[in-house]
Length: 270
Image (cartoon, rainbow, N blue to C red; front, side, top):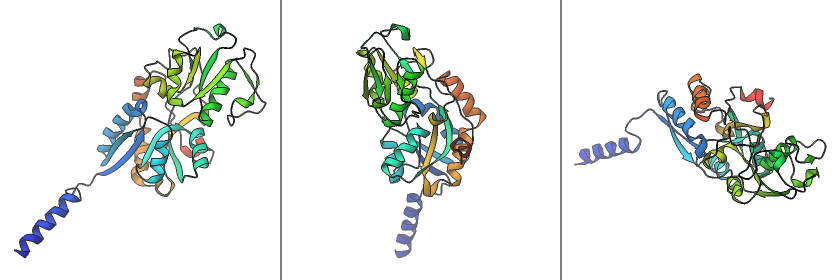
């Protein structure tokens, strides 16, 4: 009887520990817009013995908190600028380990087809998160709608506006809510992933759009600093930069997301 019980216990332990599977599971937090790419990465990673579980988030705050807490292993949803600002503000021990695409921000409108049609006093919706707000303000300046204080590099808010000739009413809201602002406001500045989730075409629909080479707005894959060199994580970055994934991004997003295949050290200037 004791021998039988020992055998059953050993069998139960074998089942609990994964039935002898050699595959490693990596939880990746991302957004709805980026999920199609990660489904392909998941498929390719499985061929390398790495199981990926995709965890979707609907905001720009929880993915970093979850990563720092160990609830997920990687996340991929944010720009370099947002990431650096967020981890400094929250004192998080996270590191960027690889580049993903850049998603150009655009100025969208259901009410005007040209920037010149924006009237005096028009309401303009912008994302309120510090780095997103700075990015939006610089895009408004590039569009010729406002002038920012000299040397403005994206850090700061509406107080950095020195000239607003049309007396635009600039209203900051959570990035995920910017697309809803199109119902009432004259225009809204919307991140590409948010635009896609709202059924907009980030290539064809914007009245005006930023270029696709702004280094601070390249998106990244992040990991906990203590784990950033893990072999499975580095392999996932390698897979993300493969020709197959690059071609998929170019076809799937049709310019809404532009692949960036560069070493993270080079992009960060390390």
